[in-house]
Image (tube, rainbow, N blue to C red; front, side, top):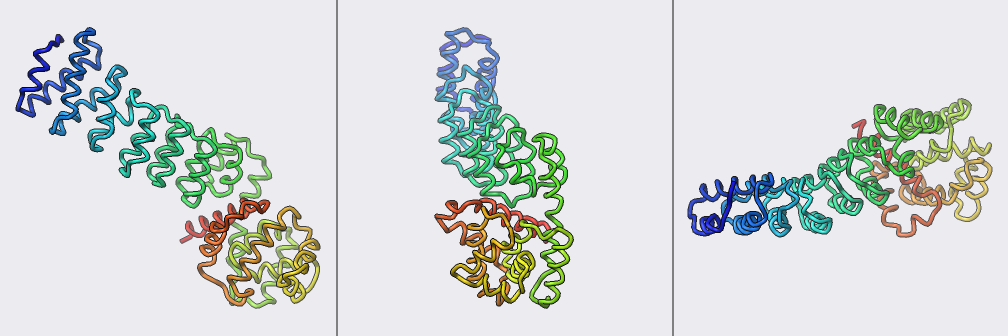
Length: 370
């Protein structure tokens, strides 16, 4: 197909939108297929610069569809199309290699359109920086699209944002677990909360130690155990249950911490009493002791000493929010999460991230049960 200056003049003078669309189709398709010599390419580019400003949407859509995969398309035309209406911009946003990293990040930052952001998330090459900007849009559909894209380069920062924003979304966590490049710090963190299908994938893909897989299998049982305990249970019933769990080797650190994450001070008191070998009454007094009482009690239980600062901080919140265990709050997990997130110094406490993970696990399990 030959092209000359008269074609450019026709575009300028042609009043018919249908005729302009026809010219746009022929010239852009021929350009993309490499049919023009250098001089013809220059004329075609000038035509594109006119057509990209055309008031007719169909004309601009034709340009976007036909030039999306052309590496010779002019940057200014492609950028103009990428910033156009969603129905026009999607092909170039998803496929054009003419768009720079800076272009894509700027468009992502300024866009509120889910289709636009999803198109970018489907690109063949996505850098860690672009991934982070897509995640920051906090849209679950966009994040799912990004996670499904095996070519998306998501670094530890990006995965951290995903986990912090959507750690309670079962579908998103499962998609994280299926990825082959999940940073090590997130593997064990999410393994306990993914579906059984994804657990099998992760066990093989990341060589999950058997001790982690085994502890994950006990997770649901622990939550079910705590679900048996409510305000209607007598102290005798709670004592019997805790003694039974201890005898069966199931009164472990994880279960004790989860009881606090649920705001269940009664179970915690009985567990600490059994683990330390003292009466429940004495354990209650030591737990409420703001000086050295709880420190001494904790050491007698032989619970991991490295977790003591985190457990003590968590216990303080539980006591305050339940008025010393006098009543159970139905919104306790929400209150606890809010307090922890508002505390700017929370991450200075050793193993507090572990505690926050347990809280998020509890929230997700409860949501699935509803």
